[in-house]
Image 1 (cartoon, helix red, strand yellow):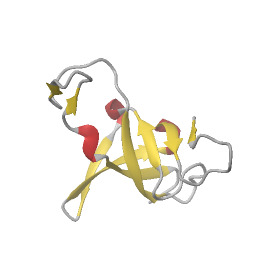
Image 2 (spheres, rainbow, N blue to C red):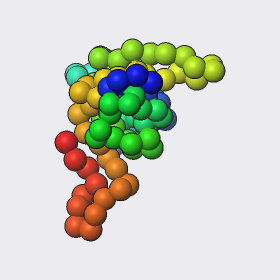
Image 3 (cartoon, rainbow, N blue to C red):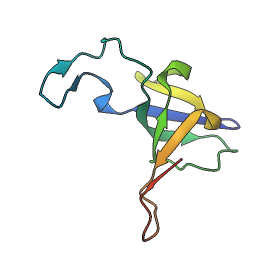
Length: 98
């Protein structure tokens, strides 16, 4: 990975979803602009705010897909990340920072 690039793997929940009343919403359903969660797999040398294993929130409209060893990943710039949900938190913090 080079510079400020972040390689992520989409969460399994990115497919079809269920509404609160139990209705299945297919992944192909048209919705308004919705952000997606993904798991960080690899980082470039200049990435400072995330670590491998963090969950990040990003806009799926701004993605570039890449296939590595028959696995599909998404390549993003660090500045395209909207939030990080991290396990490495101190006491009294929520674990979600923007």
